[in-house]
Length: 345
Image (tube, rainbow, N blue to C red; front, side):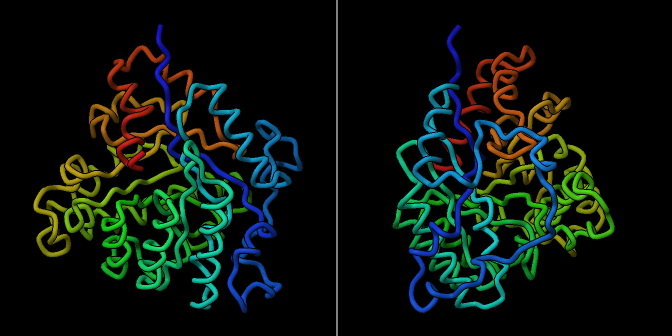
């Protein structure tokens, strides 16, 4: 039986600030502060009781991480991997506009120079509190060969569907790059997670809360209607929330859409089905079949989430390849073709 080859739509690199700093322009290079804001000092790996897959740690330099990723792809019949930061995207939260621009540019230079290959595609980062500057960075980073840009869900003045960000989306379309809205728990206090006491609580709640906030903004502000060529994705919380949440948005559109969702001539669930939006799936989603039937297979993409502690790779990949309730065509779309389209690989 032929193995369906995959594309990883959401892997990670553990970038190091000491490798980013040489790419900073003067006068920022000698500045001793962190390149992005910090967060709560959670014990994410339970004092190393949770194994790190492939012994993948921040001790590895960029070249070592590239070599490890190539090994992972070879071992598991994965053609290409789209790689996201594990810190650098937080430059969008920096309050100093010039520092944010300088830090984003340094991260993007580092990613393009030290991580990007014909198989590995690091996503760029943007100074999103200044959309005009972010649009210019889209143009610059695209010229370096980056395939798209990671927007995290916190540290922003408005939801990501707000017209405030239109220059960024216009630039993404013009440069044929993708926008990936990535879940995060870093500043989950923005979603009320400061009411919670353990990392498990914050992690379980914070990721979907941030994604749902920005998904609501994107859908209700009509981003896929106003920018029908925009390739956009929502990552890191699975996909089986889509039927519930689109039903909820439909209810509000039916009663208040004319006044408060004027760009949506169809209900949100149909607007989503007609869009280029993609959503990454997690392992062991028990309602995946029902979600595919509700939104269509073209909207779902596969992700390893390596090397994060909560990832379920490679089991999740083999389970999808062996799934009896998915057709061969659905597996091909989910594991490979949809990601190829999203990131223009």
